[in-house]
Image (cartoon, rainbow, N blue to C red; front, side, top):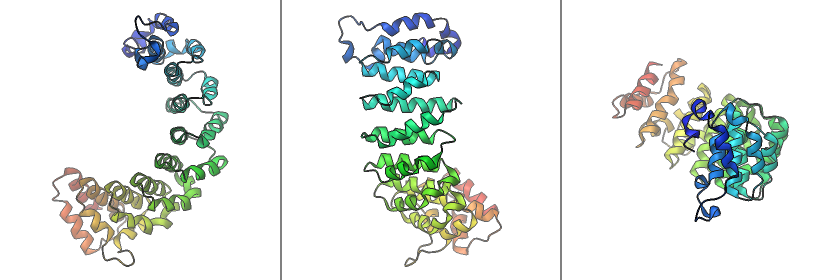
Length: 329
């Protein structure tokens, strides 16, 4: 592992020596299966090779060969290494069907790394990953959604049904991941607008916040839900209030205006509530949400203007800076 941490150039000279440890399962006086993953020589060797750049890629075949061993830690280390190498996609696809959920999760995470490294993920791989949205294990469904959200060019119409199913998942972590996938689609996400808007009332604050973000990413296509999002300014969770403010700003001027009007049956103007919030990040988000409105030439209502003015004297610099920009337009 230490050699792998040296960096590509310095460690490359030791690639062959590291690769010999792939077959090493002997640890004196110790039950190898009971060791932590990176204390196992073959696991550490696979991880190190994954960090060696081209020198490591040349040994991807050796890593793939030992990925069939029964040791789950070793299989996971191999999947991670192949992801870092961007090699042997077929091995990753095959292991998406592994009997252990940890290996399946590692395969999905490997595809995220591959995508971030600029390697194009083909439709066959995307289709196989999308099938993991129906996996019996919540962790696998969650990581499948997160993996798909990291890949550009996903033919979303082909998987709309599967995404709608995970939006109603029993696990809130899976629902959040599905909402992140939808948010990654930008304006295309309008296909799921109705389903996403229903999550604004979900019992989990993480789901409500993710729903606000997903609607905001739809921009004008999500603006029809601006009134519902503005009501989230009164949510008990500061995370949701912050996400709602950002979403309303993403809707544009017409969407932002919903935050300047008290909801039916109430007397609290949403933006004033935000600007007086006890959490500085929420106050800053409120000021930032008003910046686009001011920049468009719209005049803030007097009571909202006064609330922004008060934020110029806030104890936190981010709030003061955001308030100043909101007033200058």
